[in-house]
Length: 399
Image (cartoon, rainbow, N blue to C red; front, side):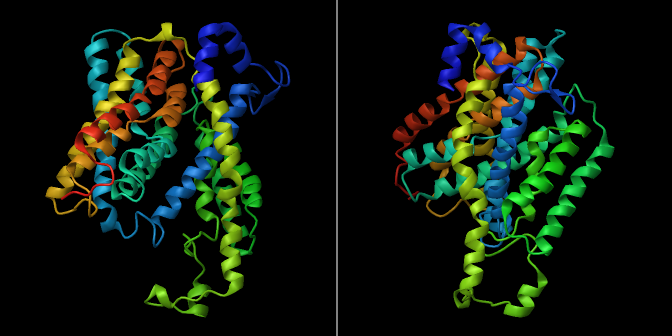
């Protein structure tokens, strides 16, 4: 991210030529899309990024996951709603203050989805530093961020279709075909994740491209069909499993056969084998998307920063506090001061915010300032650290 910023501010033209470089020549296209560096990163590589995010979301709703049973997750889920409505409302309010009455208001307001998601990995890392390992606020924030990004994926799919390719819903049948293929492979006992990704994911990707919906979301509908999560539960667990092994009432009595344990470990290779390349690839994503000149800072930059940091903090804190009043308590050992600091950390937009900014605005006059706002939201980490020290949240419980 820093490398992209530096390069763009040293020679913006050289940076743009690199990002928009046509790898196979100007005439080379895939389903009407030019094969540029930016295309390969944003519409092919990001498929795997959102695939890993979907795996986290999928596991969280399975038995034993952070969102299961639902009562356990009600307060963080209410916080999630605040983490969407708060930033979106702040965005619209500031857009009206700065651009109300002008012809640009509608264009600027279209970026309301930029501050709605949280960078899961960075938020988790910052939370561990501020709260200390094992603090309940970390799991609260992780659960909130996962649910937050699930809503973010939906926002991208519904509100930010490809403007160069009008939505053609009939092509979504190809996405359904990919889902059917994934389910069929599962039923026939295919255990290797590359088959799901290449065959079912490939069909889904083509269907989204041709339908005019963001293709980076191709694996969002395929990953839930992958069998064998580490906790031993699947979204589509075969009925034959329970008939054969029974349905124990006490998980401590479960003794899985060695072969089944190996099966679960083997299937979890999907995340383990992709995580390092994806984490490494995020450097190139940040480089290709965060390269904006400091001269591009405008009111849009301020709107994005304020919506992420202030909107998230107010929205999450308020909605979770209301949840407490309605009888849905915060996790044991977590109080309002921990909630407030966690809400500030959730303002770390970065990865997803950069991605949405590129979809919300076509005109660089608005896109570049919005991306700068997403980058500068990293300042939420410093703000959270300061409030964390003031409120003495590290390793402490709410007493």
